[in-house]
View 1 (tube, helix red, strand yellow):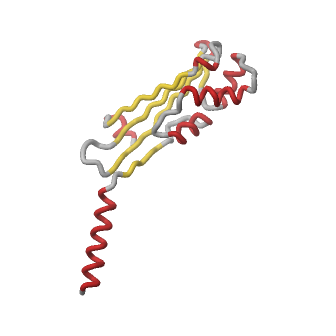
View 2: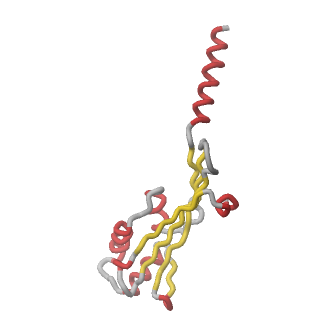
Length: 142
């Protein structure tokens, strides 16, 4: 009898503890493929720093810092280049959902926009990240 009560008490305690801890679910499917996506997934939820991505691009350029080579390299890394606008962009987002929270839906959309102007050089690379929490858009998408 004591053994059954102990097992019952232990199972209630274990399931109660499991329900009490928040868990985070992360969906990277809406990020374009390439080295930039790999950088974002490695550092998430912290966005990659401008300096880190600049160094990554510089390591791929192998000393050739011409606009054409910058455009070729960042395209291979996952960016889309528009020659008429002299800009290359990386646009994507990560969806997250946290469970075990007491308020809100626990959903968030982490939006990444990375831009570079090949004509202006590697120093023009900028990383912008926004977070929108509990939005209707993220509820529909996840």
